[in-house]
Image (cartoon, rainbow, N blue to C red; front, side, top):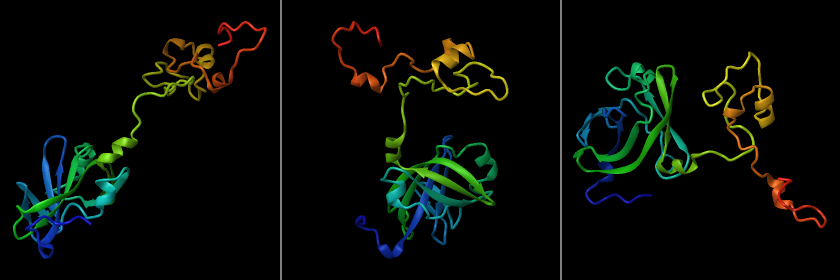
Length: 208
């Protein structure tokens, strides 16, 4: 449990959430029964977000957490959600002294990874700072092609129902598309590790 900074009284604390969209718009929400101004942001009382995202999941551990909200013309709107204005938005959770909102402490920060609709509510999946450690970066060096048949990297328009097993031979012989092959067909496989020189054979690397 995190110790409260000096001056914060547990009996006068509430939660506040400040949401910053990619376009710079800042929205505030609080679970207090009266609106508050926190960090120069007007926080709407009992509106917008629920305290569903826990500190350990959203702020300081790999993985994701969820937070629920209600569509509101004065806050988060269906039009803005559909336009993607909340994709990648940053959320900061705070504990606030409602009697003096300038006194507050940060609990966690997260970014919105995805948003889904649930009737008149939305469900935002939050990714904490350490979730970036789970993100795959770069490409995997493999003999198979890592493009999808017909996408921009593949570069062809396949016939309806066509499939591809992502092998070099298939790319060349079936689709005549060797120039766009996105794999490494000459990369050594696991069997390379078990090879050893054999007496009497020509050991010049020709078998690879």
